[in-house]
Length: 440
Image (cartoon, rainbow, N blue to C red; front, side, top):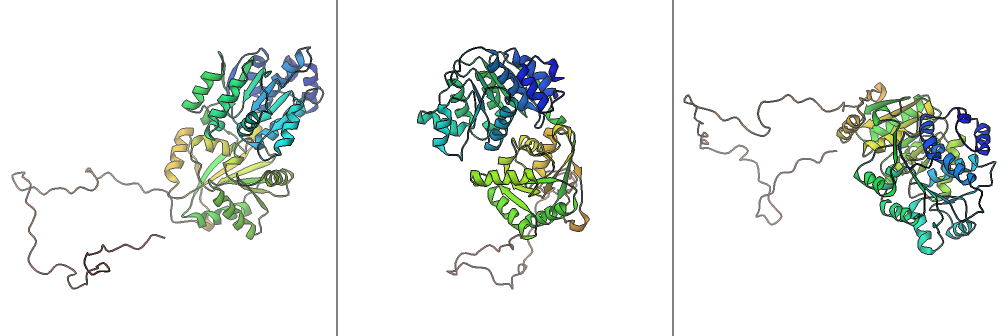
């Protein structure tokens, strides 16, 4: 129960108002040591409630000291605008009975308006690394008084190329007393290096392994022959699956726009979200999806992190994600907070090896499914029997003594196809190779 955690009474009042009764596993594990001031390295799946696991300890710290207001005392770094906006809403919700204020700094918003907001020195500053660096270089960002630094979705920030920016911002918070690092995956060498450089004697909390992610989500694959076949499958699934809201992921912006156009032409109420969309369009897409005006969102991986939409229960991978971590974050949009969901990946011959590697990474086997109305010819790679010899080599013929026979001499006479004209180049000199027809 939340009332058994030693939080400030005003925060407990907000928790009760929001109808939070029992903490999630990540909250129960992370909040107590965070309240003690420990640095934390937390791995927890998306949708597990980890935002509250760092927001509540931050607000508790800021409320606990009877001291005059100073400059911004907490900084939360996140990879995407959408995740930053949702985190601000969480800060505002938990701080509703306090004097504490939050501020948001992301790309796509008016730079001067953000600078004016920061001059008011919000207690908690939430932002994306790229835009914060722009304000730093413009002299409008001051981090000297920051006591707590949070790196949320740290693995994704590294994937997006923010490693240098994050390191620079962390170094500017030189007087900080606590650092909390959260991610949904264990990451690679880059993340381990960041943990070593920004955390001091951290407590490591791993609330799950990747093989345990999204236990409430069924994971299926459907084989397809090509992109046009995938488009047919997507339309059929949207017509026949029972769902409240759906996201379809593509790997490219061009692919997202093309699929969005195809769906709209067939009467599907959809929106598209990717990095080329301005902030106004991105907000509109999210609002329409959350309010139910549009049930379908076509998106690139910009939406795979931090997107928390109630009732989102179907994820379709039109393109297979490029890594196991990206797959985890995509399907993490559904089956959140103990709910149920369905994740379907469309697999053609170019996707199979990538899909198999993700199965191995997750230590899972995805359910195979066939749509009989749109069954294709590709059903996965054919099993090739071992021949007992290396591919591309010919077995030599041996004589009775075991020695290799000499190759037979070509019989005299005309060559095969000698009556067919040779292909020559335009100048009539060098022979040209006969070309095979291009594959469709």
